[in-house]
Length: 407
Image 1 (cartoon, rainbow, N blue to C red):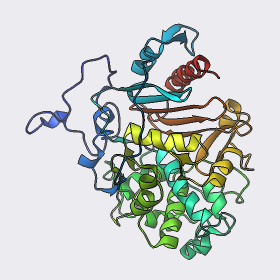
Image 2 (image 1 turned 45 degrees about the vertical axis):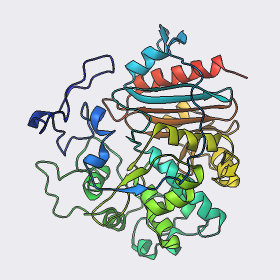
Image 3 (image 1 turned 90 degrees about the vertical axis):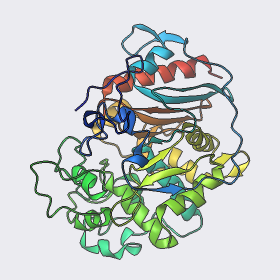
């Protein structure tokens, strides 16, 4: 393990030199952990096999920032006076873009990142996948109310038997899957192995572990509760959705994402997605993209699916994300967001106001607030998967921005 470091700290010479010294090369078992992730989240294509999500031939215009918010002062989550710049440093920010009052109010890059750097999005990838799925729903190629086994009949012998595609989209299927990030042999730990992200952890016999994501999906035989009766966050649900998308289109996921999202948005740079041993792109967390292309995506969501005059994401899909009749949440999230839910692979803060987020571990996020006209993309490399203190500090900063530009 390597100690993490803030942007204000000296940067260790990770992967510098020809060749880099052995102790400065991210180990494959820990490449995504502190503090290796401060380098690796911008260099996934140098670590893992990836496929390109092709950019548009001509990039859609996106304005430059009109100013800076580094000196924006406010009271932090702990009640202590702070400013936006200090928050960015304290929360291990790699890049951030703030849209408010119809303008880019702030855009900054840190920790060696620049406007053309791609950054690992972790579970923000889920929301990108869902947005491409929305166009398949609009065309009738996918129907949320249909059983998922209608698209993937092999799942009749799994925990998804009897689940609809909407259950998968909302993570309310009853399929048993452990999302414990710190246990190497949990289901999500085995997913790292199946996805090709990690070798088998030392001391574990992986001879019967799945060698690709599809093998893991069909190995999950148990449904612990009735479908549609509870929300439980499980990354594998996104990969079930993506396999259904591939079946109905006859295309691989990177091509689907390019043709139905990245190119229509007018993205300026190729994104990338990690590939498992079967060539499958990891929908639940494997996408890397630039800050400004994510801003194009976020602005489309803010404008009900439209960007630069083009309807990219179906308006009906955006409305269903914001206001869909879901209502299920686990106790922890319900306590934080009593008016919230999880819908179509998005986190809904308030379904009445339509406020929603894309979240990924280690501090990735896109905030879409139609009620205030605010959209913020923040890319980070936190020391831990989830950190309530860093989350609260981040949200206090975003709230200060909203209050400053409240319309």
